[in-house]
Image 1 (cartoon, rainbow, N blue to C red):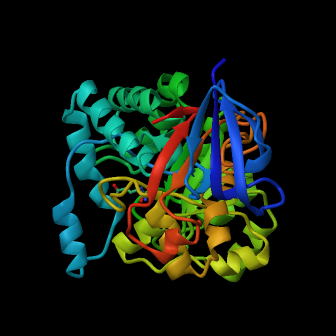
Image 2 (cartoon, rainbow, N blue to C red; image 1 turned 120 degrees about the vertical axis):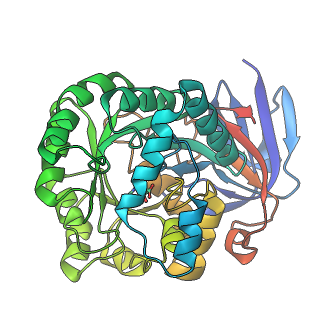
Length: 385
Ligand code: NIG
């Protein structure tokens, strides 16, 4: 085994239980794992040595919500939105048509390009979804492409009812043959619980069908209105409910009293001009939150977790430490149960060597210098990218 010492770390955020930032630290990695963490002055010898030059080190970002398997471009829709048009679920149909027309290779190439773009900005764990195929063959092709680029894959056959298809027939397909066909490639099931997509009872039907096959549950909920998705997610014990822009007091209480993570998507909120979710209220009530990119061509075409962290601090009332936690260890909670991924999102001896160095002395610079590319180096599973 070859070992690497990363030393002269000015500020090390480990995201272990103490949540402290250490100074003048070092770590040793080998075999894809963290082997040692401690003061730089006490660092053991290793085969190679990387001088961090006083920079800040932290775990790689854990991005638990993306849709990177698609084809086509919706910049005209975005431009119209910036001129005042409202975002609606129906825009998904345009991406479905382009995705169905694309080859397997085109889908995989686009997805890989976005995954690499994310990694270059510090993302070392990526979830992605199907959901732009919406017929059996195209969902299977999407699931296969997703599995070739992402750490975990979510089946989102219940994104919308595709144009021209009977609603009941489609639900039978999503919960039956389509589910069976994508099952080898996916670990989670999701549904878009929203006006224009699926109502609460339809969402419940989809999620329970997935649970019966052993999939973990996630929901897109309360993005464009009070859809009931959040309450359903807490009732069913979903790992995560994503978006959460429109929450009443009972929704906040339900999240605070559950193990369901509220995954917040600040780049999407900006790009769709939705009100930000009440992140401060959620944290103060005791709910768990995560931050994710929601990279997709319709509502949030960015892979940048640093942008999401900066926006959460500058616009949503999170402290630096809360935002960084929500994009690393807090996010891991939204994917870890039953899927053995609890080692992501933190730096601990024996855990995965997924880390990044910032071209800055402190994680505070992520929001202090918004929009500046601060990623200096990224290691995924111990390998420098
Ligand atoms: O998470 N909200 C539903 N699905 C995606 C966007 C879909 C689209 O507009 O293409 C999201 O925002």
